[in-house]
Image 1 (tube, rainbow over the protein chains, first blue to last red):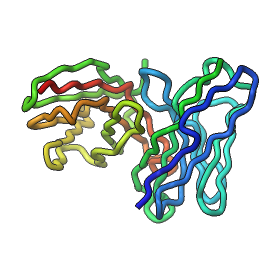
Image 2 (cartoon, rainbow over the protein chains, first blue to last red):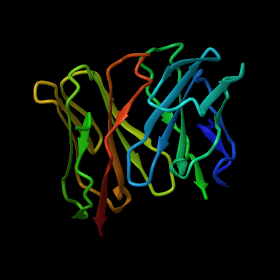
Image 3 (cartoon, rainbow over the protein chains, first blue to last red):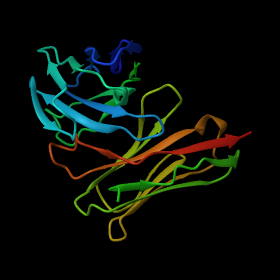
Image 4 (cartoon, rainbow over the protein chains, first blue to last red):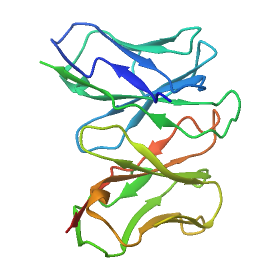
Length: 115
Length: 113
C-alpha cells in the first residue's frame, strides 16, 4: 500500500523563479493538504484541497497556489520565489470525504532551496 | 505568543528510560491532539491522536491531554535507540474537519544505547 509520494525530492531555484511541486495521496485518500517546514520549526499549514477546490488556507501570500486533479493528486505552485521560501514542503493526505476526523498522513517532502 | 509551545530540547536519555515530552497551548478551541515522530530527512509519522482529555495508550506510548490546563504530554516507556527522532505535538480546532493543524516546533530526542 503506497503512502503519500512527493516529487521531486530536492530542488534548487533562483530568486524570482517559479516552482511546481507534486503529490500523490495515500491510496484511498481524497484530501490533500500542503505544509511548509522551515529548518528547526514545525510544519505550517499552507492550504487544503478537497473535491478539486481549495477549502482552507493558512497565512501564506497569493504567490502560493495549488491544484487538485480528479485522481486526487495535487500540485503546489510558488511564484516569484524569495530566499525565505527555502524549506521542506510537505504534502499530507487524509480520507476527509469519508471521515471528517480522518488524521493526516505525510509524505517525505520536497526540499526547496532558493539561491 | 505562539499558539503551541514545545521545548525544543535536545533531550538525551539512556536506553530503557521513560521519556516525557510536553506541549502547552493557548487556544482553548483546540480539541484534537496528535503526536508525530519525524526522523531526519523524512516526513512526520503519525504516532497517536485523541479527541478527549485523559490518557490514551498504544504499546510503549501514552498520550495525555489536560484541557483544563491546556497541556499535553507523550510518555515513551522502555525507550529504544530507534526512538531517536524529533517529536512534534500538533492540534486542531476542528475547522475544516481537522485538516488545518497547528504544530509545535518539535523536541529532538536522542536515546543512547
